[in-house]
Image (cartoon, rainbow, N blue to C red; front, side):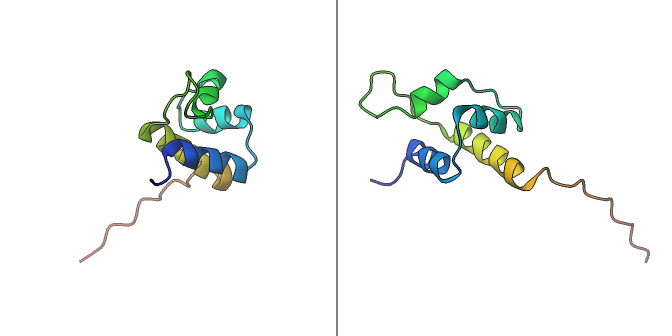
Length: 85
């Protein structure tokens, strides 16, 4: 069996040395609200009674926030000049 979203999330957390507060702030960058207790449930062992699977939307929002956290916000696109024929 391959990696689950929870596995990927855990590995990213360790690789970037992120704490729960950091993850909450990163998710807030994309207007995605998450609590520390929700994170605790995601990071639990699979056999724990309060374990929660990390959904695709959750991981996607975290990754989008992580991009902004690491690179900064995307610059606004300038309107290209209309082509003259």
